Length: 482
Image 1 (tube, one colour):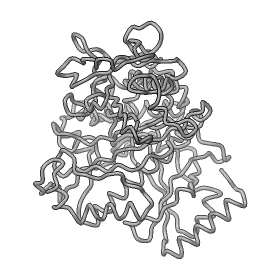
Image 2 (cartoon, one colour):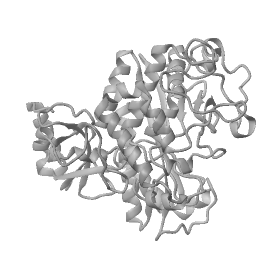
Image 3 (cartoon, one colour):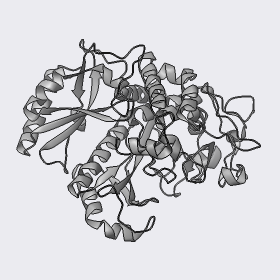
Image 4 (tube, one colour):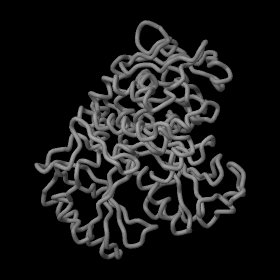
């Protein structure tokens, strides 16, 4: 925690600015291990005090479940203890769709002012610094998908991706854009998605912590605008069992001294060696990373083949069925080359996602990992045919590390293979993903025991909570919670 005079002066300036804009309350948020955004709110006049001293909150929220029941873990649980929530004043934002309110994400510290070991935002910051120590800057961005309903139903008939849906909800979409713009959020695109009443918005990339902050801000802005229009925004992985759900895809690119490492190299499709190794680390870790990015039993209702959800442990050029999709971008667009992780969804804590992906990527970088051959087409149909000539140069190796086995080897395990040939199917259930997570030395070291064990405890408890429930019961219990 910072108690410097400059921090106090900055907080007083911000409080005066908020007061001049008739802002009376500041929402201080963090995201728990179940993926829910929790809050403590303060009057604007308390901002200077809280910026220096924080506001109290129990650590037990790190073992809350999606239904607000509570489990326990070896390091976190029970009624004892207190933390200090310290707002990040650089992220302080006046909320356009909530008159009288501002928002700031928090970092969490103990009562002695030491970083709290299980703080997810500090974890993401720590991993970003670890990458920076290797001379790598990560630029990341989340896609936000949601389904909008009125009184529990979706009365709009516009087709998937259709202009008719924009016309039907023109005022609503306009206000979403207006509110995000007023908050300084740069929107890249917004459009109808596949399912009835479903939309997606993508925003400009940011640093890993900033990208996670934006994911929270975008979601709460969409929620607020929806309510102002008499609508409900549902962000859960599945709204209707058997239907297409809401993804939370993560885009990322690696940079060094202003150069995009995802292009201009001699690796697959122009990747540099560092970019290939990083992405190979992410690909190899996906079975374990699913416990972070697909964190609820509802997630596995969404992860079905042939739905562009990325359920096979493979990568491909512009392949929307691959769990890891690589995009080269236009030749004259240096920012365009990036990778997309498609198997994550909107129930995930975005700070855990960015931090864990960096940890897995850095492990691949450390090991000199190489990507297997890229996959073309839908692996559920083709069996995972490789792209001719796709894996060039260093990327032609069959395995991630030495040995050429074709199996990713970054210390995080590999998902079971389907019968026959082709890429492995990623875990089909949360318990299966948790198995991979708990055996991941890479993620345990990066997260630290306190945060690692709290995540595992929440995943175990939610698996038990929903055991034996029908798919639609799981969807109904989770779709409106995130």
